[in-house]
Image (cartoon, rainbow, N blue to C red; front, side, top):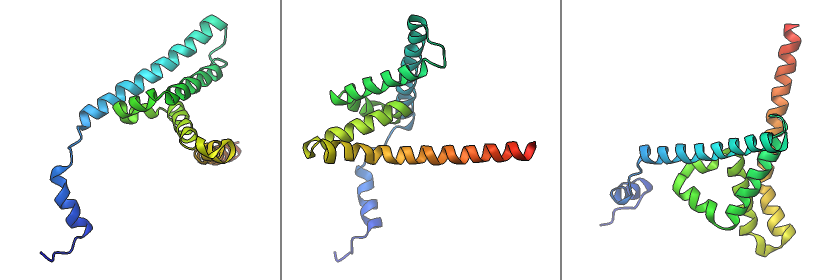
Length: 152
């Protein structure tokens, strides 16, 4: 029994004890919950258009702000985490998933103070998204300008 424990050996030994994920079931839950989140966002946008006389274009900002606020509140009360455990990838719809990630980071580090705990850790997550957005917008703008220049 002097068999050396290697990573491959260990993985082969524990494989029979690992639960087998149901891809169809998990995919279905993600699809339904993600779709319901998007449906709720569309209903919010329609509400802003009908009740507050916004246009389709101007209703986007209050819709996103409402989704961010509701997600932050649900994360603070622990509801969104339970939704995420149930829905898996369906709960990371872009705006709500990002709001959940930022709020979770803030709550996790609140004992370290407002600046060094909450703000610092919130913007660790937000920083990567902001940098990616700026780089993607710059590359897209450069390509659009270059293609437009070449075609004219």
